[in-house]
View 1 (cartoon, helix red, strand yellow):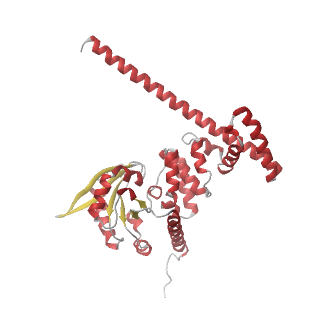
View 2: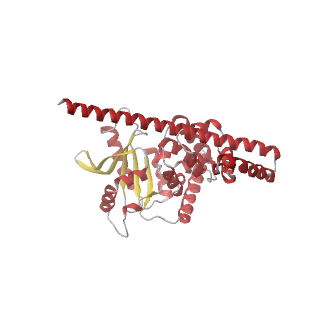
View 3: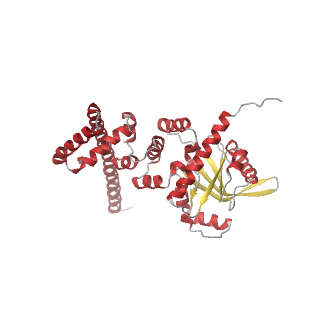
Length: 356
């Protein structure tokens, strides 16, 4: 290499390294500034709330906030107007634990918190906050996931509240995702563009064409491994429709696609796949493979009687056309209530039957 060319390469390398240092510093500064502003807004809200509580009257509180907003806006701009101060007060009320806010503020911006504040249910709000922190969602992504009712579609939301709290505590403390947080029902596959009648192969082909979008719908952590994964048992060949790996769960995930409703025979087929994967593909540091049967419909009693989760199997519907928001809310709330009632019956049922 000539001296001139060597000098040019060294110059490009130096420029690349310095650019990296600048971008890294900018990112660090942005995180520090964002966290500082978020904690400032929390402290302002907490301080105003403390003063308002002294008066114990709503009108008194409104007068305090109105007076403060006028003075602060003159000095610091519209970022401290009446509506902004009101949001800060709600922020300190809704997220009352200083340590939790300090941790969240390292990943979530003030804009993230503004998306979370309107959520009425504490567990729902905590779910989105912690998942946003762990998976580093953008503000737009957070908004989309709230609009698509992601929380209500997770298996976690269908558990009793004490188990939901336990799952969220584990997520907050150890960043530990569980299958109940990862898998959802239903999955929205409207981006596949499938209309009216189509074959199972058409569904699989469409997923492969829109693989990136499909993985986004599955959630963070999924990596595609194979399509029509061939396994051999005795002299018979079987094929797993789609095989993924979840980096956080450290599990292989076998996906079986069904055009119709879930049938009991589907369980046996998936169990065979999972046993084979466990024996031939599972690595020493991985947990047992898990199966996801995606079908056009499911019957609650059939799924419950088969106790699929004991076999490491999940069943979920897929929707190729999005329902209206009202229809989706009704469907999910019914599913949540049904699941919780079923769990309550299992808990209340006697552990052993009396002998006649």
